[in-house]
Length: 277
Image (cartoon, rainbow, N blue to C red):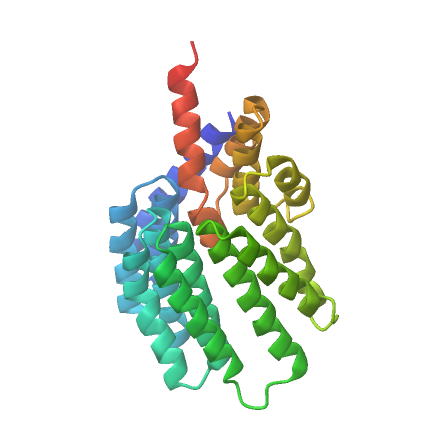
């Protein structure tokens, strides 16, 4: 029922956006809204037509950057690292040119995560390293910001090692991430540590530990819920897994956690529907 309500809502949003575009063809906001709604219902090609228009009619650099990131996320919904890189790669370069090293690092890390979860580990590592390098290049870098980028780099290397099956290396990077976190310079980052430990346990095949750790992480994060659902599947609890997949599939975010989890959730639910008498 919830999925149907969300689907009807998204169709309504897309229809309203289309009407607004007819009345004002150069409305970036309307093109973005239409693109997001279409991505969320799986109409990626149509969504990108609107994001392309949003980029084209953007009134300023900041608006263009938002539309460009939205276009990259449309490719993330398909697990298309190369497609996302076509948009976030140049955006990264533009921030470097403006010496906005923090945002350059943010964009590089965002793209790296898309590539990691799309299975392109080498490209992910390249972009995570570039993101770390950009962030650390900020003039007058204060200790807390230095620790932030160091934590993110260790976090990323741990996940990369886990996906490559190098579990001892993954744990070593996780230990370093914990040491940095324990300095107390970046309290908001603490919420990302159980996500890391749960992630490593999942890819090491320790599903009981993965479940315990992921349940400590942000329960409003679609990616974490998706990973938790996959963990329940491995533990044989399909009912709980499907409950979480339904929650993920009803998400309306247009960001890496949503893009990297909604398609899987809908695939799982569709498969379940086909196998249910």
